[in-house]
Length: 264
Image (cartoon, rainbow, N blue to C red; front, top):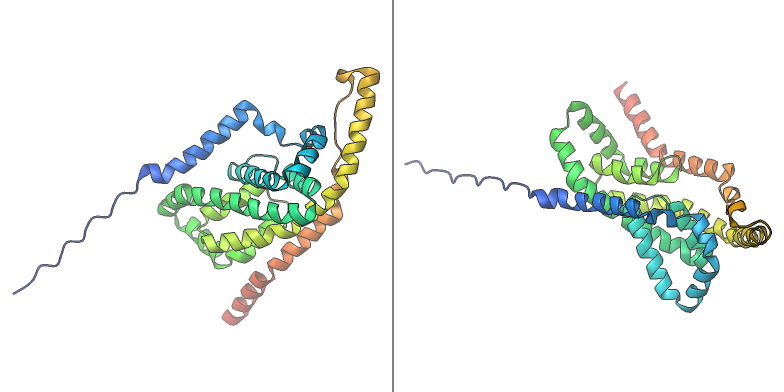
């Protein structure tokens, strides 16, 4: 006597709100920020104009200021807003590189992880379901050396931060690998810019004094307010990051070289 095998329960359909809701919320918040012009406050100009006020507040409310800075940084990164570099410099200037650097690293990693999870849940799963052979091959190749590739992308400042946040989600990088690669990959650049920001206080004070004198003599309309922070980002710093990024790719290059010679 044959017994009937139990019927396989149908797969539950994915919840559209769970899949697309977070992404829609992120896009909506981005649109709100740009529509209200709030992103314009994330600039060196605003930092310079409000430097004395911010410095005074921080001296009396250090813990609250650190938490507010970390939360703001998380939101800026999670919403892929411009101004992360200005915020990094602000953290090093206002809190010192010893505090500003580590807080920025943790906040940036947290914000990047949020947008990574949102993109992976919506766009990443959709791409995986509809990907052709060429896309699947690209995904498999990236996943095979995901940590080295991610470290390279984080270390070399030639790639926009928000692009590096999204690309691994579309290429199926595991969450653990992404967090480790992001955390350690942004430490050199973040600490370097936070340390360099210690020189920014002198630049801001000089700019504020010259601007005030110009306004007194010529009026506000004739005196544009500009902070020249170009000296903080030198060619040598960029080349140093590029060199470190190449070092991160050495395991990938060695592995491909070994596999090629083994096949030969």
